[in-house]
Image (tube, rainbow, N blue to C red):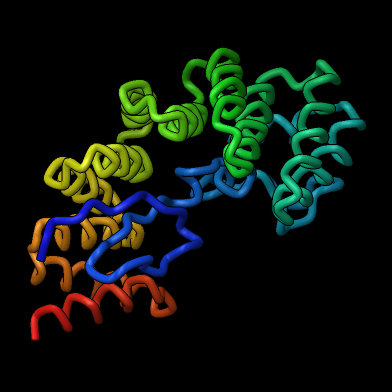
Length: 260
């Protein structure tokens, strides 16, 4: 089989587009870090904060809300979370911007700006994703998820060197979080450097063995290097972690057919 390059794809699109071509899957939290991604893996704030439903509770990046006394924040934030969750990103952006216009967010400026960046990323506006991610990291140089959106935006614009620097900064801030290594693997995929991508995906699952997206992309990297036995092993791990993953099943079937 020819070593065909696979294009990074969103996690919500798992199906292969063509025979014998494996596509790397980008984690939603990697490609577009809006509120859903900010909450992922973060410790929840105290439940029962007024105006916020349990389903929309922010992660630790939004802990400032528990201490704020500005009564205008709660309804705006809940509306922004709701719109973001329901993929009305343009409307969510306007709500997040109104929060910033209040001028009372303090350390909440970074996560709020980053949520705006994530919404722009989901809309495919990578220039604005970069602009707002920069605002997030300027507000707090050690706000990790700002560098994820910054890297995603640069990657979307085709500036892989800057994307690499942004993701490397995330790794420096959160060395035990798989998303940084995973993102660097996606950049390596875009550079068609399968062995380098393999290295980063292996690092992502080394820090989190249950990180199914890392196993999936590692399998794709192995397949593009014709390491079929290793690819099958990784796909079996993906299916064990997520039995509903149709992309993993499709790739597994295709590899087995090629070996007949």
